[in-house]
Length: 336
Length: 286
Image 1 (cartoon, rainbow over the protein chains, first blue to last red):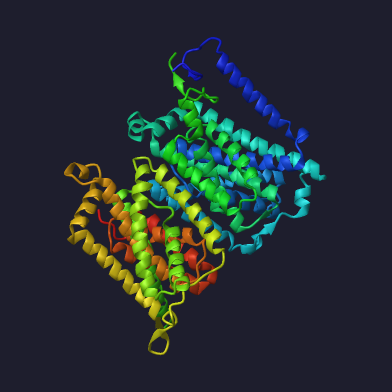
Image 2: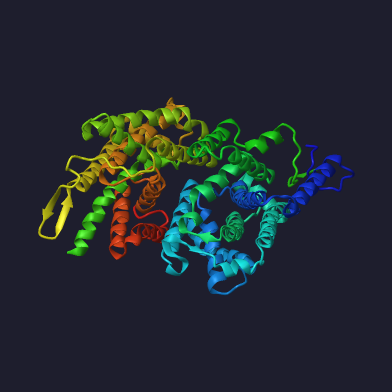
């Protein structure tokens, strides 16, 4: 094990680590300057990709490190979106403040919801979370103030409160998306390098062993569930700010916010930070290529996901790692 | 008697939900495996009956028998060729493979049959009813669905407790690692379980096809109803799914009475209440 990892002891000059660090800085720099070089359509596509990256990192943190497979994270995408609309429209919270506030409220709601969902284990947990998302969707349609079943648009005045010009709004919104995506990647990375990360990795590798070493498995899993709910709702709030319109069907779509996100993570590589990044790039490249395929595109995506499970369930990044490609976001601890 | 009528209609609807649930419970019991595409297989069976009756011109009963045989065979093969390869301690691969199958099936049905709502005519049988007194009428189709559910559960009970295959399935459910040591093949046992479950799915789907309108997207909600009936009834109890199905059906009937938008929501809430109070279900066997 001589690759780039978190050294337990200080090590000297490492060219591989230096190169990956330079690559990260270049990639972040290119994305940070996108409003200055990207066309309007590209910028919109990048915002969407960054949103999916954040959702994928959240699902990956939940499934890849705690083994909690949820098919119901659309509950928090939709909740974030609806809370954002409610806070901005009825509570008079400034638009950009309403986004993090929606995430905070969603995290509070996730506490009793998580308590209920945690009464189910394994595959039952997966379907139970889906039922909860459906309950959220049906409840959202019961609020006439939020447009009921037909949904509601964000008033023009609120959209204009971000910036007066369309270009200005798009630049501000891009940086919100960029910030959320950066927060999701850096947040997961820092979390995994902390004491919590050690507990998470232990749980991922063996729950009984982690418990025997004093890790409170249930508590750690619950905290991660709440954290990913908040991150997912934060992203959901932004997604519906960008769309400027929310309906129960769009907000709680299982295909959009669960199937696509899960396929991104699993095809890219579950349980790694690089996997979801690779998955998002592939997903958007494929979507561009298959824009006119309609239902065949979804059939193809489902087939690829099944193929990954049959051929190499570690996903593309996992398969590359096994062939000696060094990790970019070092989270493992290795004695040197 | 509005209340009595609600209870009767809800109970009869519960028979259909018990049929949805039986296949799911059987596969989970034997293999600890949840098929996310369960509802989509129900919808596929409905479309197969549509083809048998409308395209091939068969009698609905002949169609049901044909679809049941076809699904049982497909279930056996699908388990052996695909699902057995991803079954192990890790729950992600089977969840993901069946999630992928669900997306594939929905979109393939969309491609083949369009998004239009369909229904299989049952030759007047679907609208006939028995009237009990002046206010209560029992539809012949819902009644025969309920009786079919009891019949199917009775057959499953008989297979489980009175046949060699049943002993094998129960042993595999208890400890799948030990059974091969006694000379049985898990691959074959699992495939037989899926074959039987798929036959039940076919009966459920063909009933659905005659009872209501269906389209390619309704599978996932059927999965959720099946799942809720299983959890409400309690794990490991064949007759529990009937009780679970009835409770779900009655809750939905009461919800629909309050407001049309509450029907499905009321069923979900009944499930969540049971989950909060009795997470192992009402009639779980320890």
